[in-house]
Length: 395
Ligand SMILES: *Cc1c(COP(=O)(O)O)cnc(C)c1O
Image (cartoon, rainbow, N blue to C red; front, side, top):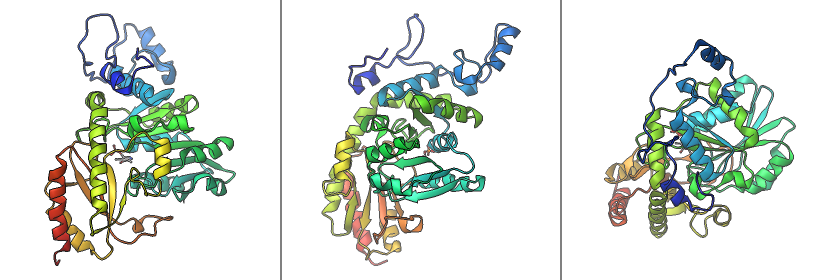
């Protein structure tokens, strides 16, 4: 058993990997398998009629196995949670969790800063008679003015993974609790180490474990952490959607957890240093990083989070055209151009929130989102410096 008074890094190093009393390997074996064999037809039949939610024995691979159970219980201990559900991807975790709580006639409120595919999923619910409104992520307790009689769910993402607004989570969950509204949060940016949403009144915390938890850009995995009341509906939703995580990807996440604290500390330090350096560049209008003093949500971030990760955005001077920004990004050698983040490597993506935001985005200028990897900071700065030269060059 994990000792409750250990620090997270001790828990991660000593996480128990195998059940039983035999001498065991340090790491769990990867369990691949669909069919589970039963000793008798009676036990086979009993398994068919058992409520999958309360199955204690392994019954069919899709319902999970010792690997996924280990990951689920470890993350519950790390972040807080009565139960967790593994899914095949982060987005699958989001859609599975939302689907658990809504039905035709309901209204849901979604932060305007959410991950774009989350937005697409919420919009897809409209055809099933669910009304969706997007709220200004900086709304705080004023969310009560957006709540209707049929509001069932509020979805948060703090900070927004493109524009980095910090939400006042306790203020929002206080209002929602009074009105019996379920709150969900995408906690991918902070990881279980830097934010404990359930302690702030959130009912369900969701991770794309594809990012920092796995940490090596080589697997797909989602995880949904639930409080007591939310666990059964979320588990049932996962069962209905056939959600299961590939055992090799679960293994990658369990392995990634061992070094999560070390990697995150390094991503944090490097990203903060680079963010401050970028603030001093004439090409940069604003750096969107919650850990920077002066950033709009900084005080709330300091109150609720225990760290910042390696992902932030840079708002360039509006004088730079899209082709100039592309010229800069094409010239980068160390910042790869690619989606996702949370691996060991640095990445950059350009975007303009004007095209999808409903509220609270008044800035002009192109944004570049950076993931700061584990390369040398000097090398990263040199790469950006030559990129800025291309940005300033005639297109
Ligand atoms: C990547 C990401 C997801 C989706 O995760 P996948 O594992 O790629 O499906 C969800 N939320 C955030 C904030 C993300 O960055």
